[in-house]
Image (tube, rainbow, N blue to C red):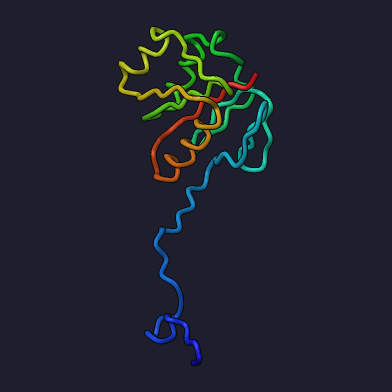
Length: 138
């Protein structure tokens, strides 16, 4: 018996694409490792803030304990709908009072380890969401 591909038997030219091809452009996190994230083609070894249209290199806090209200004002100025705070390899939460002003403005805040923040940022950005990843790298 001569095997004929199913697509040829039914006149299809090829497989059906089930996922929309979406290129969000802008800044995408393409890799992360201990002490490093790569945004587009640039390796960053210090804390940074990544938004779809902006990259802040050398963001000054390196740990949760170093976060201040001034650092969070920088995030609010980017007008996000959500902030993903990547706190390093180990999950640690900042003082809740520090995050309250963002929440009062209707900005969602999620605290997670940095690898999870990187993955979540790419997913949300790919969906066209106005998301900011604030990544602490010690």
